[in-house]
Length: 268
Image (cartoon, rainbow, N blue to C red; front, top):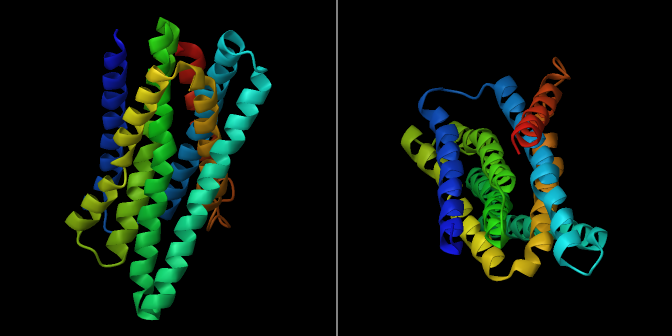
């Protein structure tokens, strides 16, 4: 495959993950209210998938490529990239939080519902950026002489991210419906939260193809961003209202991790 084909492959894969986001958002067309237990299970599953993908599909190849192509010790490249990815997501989240507070202060308490909706959509959209970058970088890395195994790993990463996009789409559309939005409008906004994934994937793939030396760092960067999202956002969210079933969401986390690990290790 040519370099352009790898970028196109990243685009196709990320369009697939966006489609799964739309499927998740489409649950608002089928259900009148949120099933909290099901939502917690799906969010836990998403967190497990992201944690497993961060290691097997991102950090492990980051270390391997750093050892093969760079003079800098692999542990420095992987650690610095990982931490910078986490810092990027933290800083982005702080900016969104600051803007939300300013919006609320300027518009008053009567806009609290709108404020929550804006924050929800911005947060999910922000979280989709590193996922798109991860898919793009994984496919872009193949331009440097990818093997069948590395191609399988990139595809598995896209599948894993697609799996965890389903609950994210539902996590946007269902609360919108609860706030009084029509089913159609809730669905459209919910699926639109995933539009940044194809954009980020193309950017990540193009950068990886053009600047091969940044690949190890870029892979670790995406891993750090994904881990922060999983640990700071998804896991706490899926553990809410768990007094009656304290291990329900935990089962989702373990299942998501196991499924992603199985796909990546067995097929990649």
